[in-house]
Each structure stands twice: as structure tokens, then as C-alpha cells.
Length: 182
Image (cartoon, rainbow, N blue to C red; front, side, top):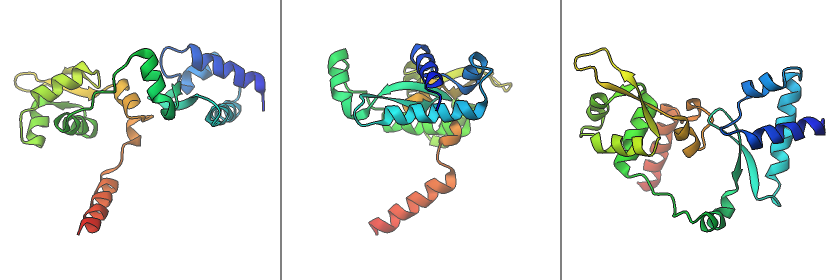
């Protein structure tokens, strides 16, 4: 394993302001074969997965980034004087899941699926930067169109929207839960 390549990747991930994508790595290290990059990235992730370390390298929002390990959360929050993450209400979670699975989508479409007005939930999700306005639909009234953001992916630890559970998987889980409860 090329230790120098691992050190370079470590530095690039460390200084990156956002998740460092494989495309950006290739742009910077164009002369390095992709297989070698993949191997070095996996080895670096393994190095940081060691239980003696307080940080790890994770894949999120389409790239690589450093993150604290969950078991150290209380000390990090105490040091940074951060209150526990405010949880999303069930209405906000429902709205967010509708956007994630049906994007791009308008407020009227969200409200029709939910069966209730979604104005407050949308405002909350916009404030938390979990969704964004991406334009207007060419329809009467030109309603705003909503999509999830990169922060949404980071918040839920997803690498891409493809990581969301498929409808069949959700249906199977719900069916198993229903059988357990009956």
C-alpha cells in the first residue's frame, strides 16, 4: 500500500470544506490509477475505523469527510456548547420523506399527498437547510419547486438519494412489524 498516497488523501479530506468527491480527488491526483485510489481510500477508512481513534472517515453526500465517532458525541457537544440536535416533528419528517421520494415537488403536491397543509413543515425544513427551492413549475400560479439538499444527505448519513430504502423494502419492514405486533 502506498503510504504516501494515503497521507495525501488524508490531507485533502482534512482541508476540504465539503465532502471530498472522487471526481475532485481524480482532478487533483489525475496521474494515480483509479484502482489505486480506491484501495488507498478503503485502507485509510480502515485505519480510522480503529477503536482507538476518536474520529473516522465516512462517505456522505457523495464524498469523503472526517466525522467524530458517535460514542464521543456527549463530549464534543459539551466542548462546543451545543444542545442536543433538535428533533424534527413527525409532520416535518413526513414532509421531508415525501420530498425525498417525489422530488422535484410543489407545496400543493406535498399537501395533497399528506392530506393537510404543509406550509409550516416546509418553512422548518427550509430553515434547517434540509430542503431548498430549485425553481418554479410551469403551471398555473408558477408554484415553487422543492428538493432535498446536500445537508439532507449529511444529516441522515446518506451518500446519495439512491441509499434511501426502496418502497418494497419499506413495505416488507412494515409487514414484518405488523406480524410481530399481531
